Image (cartoon, rainbow, N blue to C red):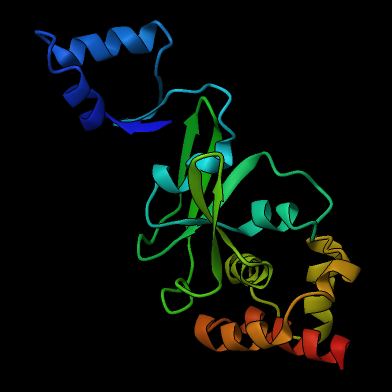
Length: 195
């Protein structure tokens, strides 16, 4: 179970020094410090359950979500998440894994994410179309359909059969919101492929 330091301090209020008692409980392994002010009780908790709690607002996206959906073949060892308006990327190293947060376009941020409830945890992830658009948004721009195809299939190693399952209408909606030439070109490539 995920707990904040204020929740724990309150539960330890019978002790003369609740903060010291909390530190002792952390040393004894009853609680695992995820980041400052955030603790987990179960050392086996999957890391993706904690991503949004570490940095909020955020949702899992980019390469981690692409691997989760089977759009790229590689396993991704870092939990990559999207945020907005921070104007910088941020990395956290925790006992549960490495977390990387990057900005996406604020206009596109609130659309096409899904909430998943699992084992008492709630976590958010970009839908497949959104995860692709987020990843393309942070890549250096390309300027032709051929270059976009090379980026998708050679650089990102996208699975073409999985890519054909995405919803082109969602991609078209998102291409307007990102203000990114890469996302617009991706929309055109998908129209051509599904044409």
